[in-house]
Amino acid sequence: KESLSVYGLFHHLARSPQGKHKLRQIFLRPSTDLSVICERLNTISVLLRPENSPVLEKINKSLKMIKDIRTVVIHLQKGISDVSGKGGNALRKGVWGNIQNFTFQILKILEAVRELGEGSKLVITNRLLTDVQPFQIHGIGKLISDTVDFERSVEQHRTAVLQGVDPDLD
Image 1 (cartoon, helix red, strand yellow):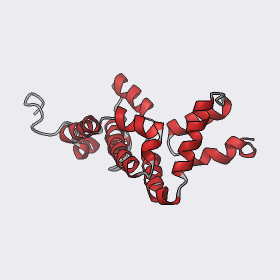
Image 2: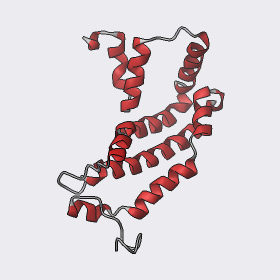
Image 3: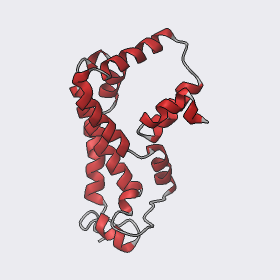
Image 4: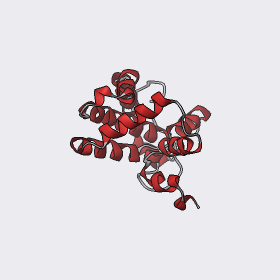
């Protein structure tokens, strides 16, 4: 019956698994803190400005491309690389492909947030711009690109390392 609830009106607007979870939490446990409510209203008023519409679309598109990174990190810690599957896209859906995609999308989101009109007034944008370090995020994505041989990994049905990364592996 969620489609008949207030949550049902909004859940399709959440684009990432994390966003859907957070939205559900907000509806199940609404805040009574006046400062949190005011900050959410300020954020919505800035995001709904007509001049921010293209920026909001960029953010929306990038969020839609992000998988649940928490699950991906858990798989990485367990040593699961999810290379099973057929076709050239199998490894791109695995752990290394998801992390690489996450780094790319996060950098696009940061770029879009910088373009937000009056975004500097928002707590969430300031927090995002100070807490997320683009050089480290870019470094992670580059490290994956410079280490994982995605084409050979698909052929071998396991994660393969590029030639020249490690002499012992070569």
